[in-house]
Image (cartoon, rainbow, N blue to C red; front, side):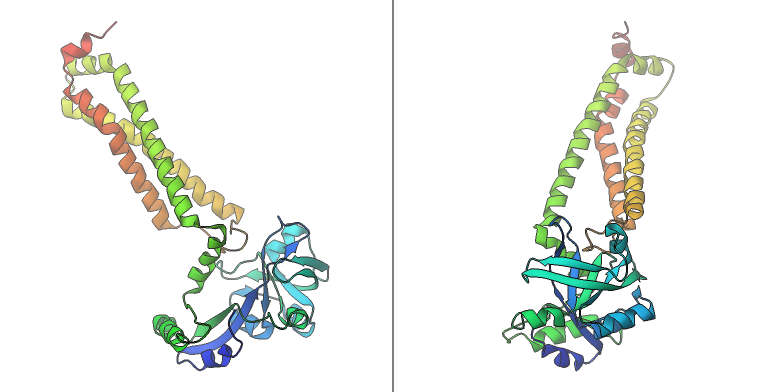
Length: 317
């Protein structure tokens, strides 16, 4: 937690246009499996901060701001649980123990894909009345006068609180959202390890398939060489076959990932809003497929090119 007194000090930092804050609540709905992002916020400044990132009808916004126990939820979350505006819902606290009942006064839609619709937002005063000693900002959000000032502002903020009892770590909002994934452990290391294991397994399968194909077609290679096919042409044909196999799989796999993630609205329960398979990721995947094609096809292609017509035809049955 960070002290509330930081808000005024942050607002005075050159380059900062506005400041708001929020705190992770950690409530679950009915069952621990029903886990989604829910935040206690300084509601008025929070809505002002994100007014360009989400759409919330004016009447719903007014109803939310004037009612202490009100909350607003993302449209995706509303649809997922079949809630409706005006309904009371109860969250079971995991950090702040007890049952917490809120009235849904609004449903917002994300204008920016990076703003999650899998979230519930409410007034921090609800918790403050029950746990005044615990309620402090979990993080502050700064809007800058110029995005290009981000590195300087981050350095200025962190240096300001370096020797305090509550030092800060300032970064981009995208990095902050991604950091929530570390609650499940080192997800990056896990996914990279699985990815490398899958690539290695695919290499073994592809290489084995090409070697078997080359052995089964030894007599065909002999016939082709007898007909005048050059070593270079046979080398190219085998490599082309390996490339078609590997790159066809890449196109199917990468294409399916791009389409399915977008169509399913995957956001890792709201922790990775706007998640998508980036063009750079597709390029890396296609590059790996090219390497696999070369690695799996090189040996059988060389064998086919070096094999003499006589030796090949000896295996004709």
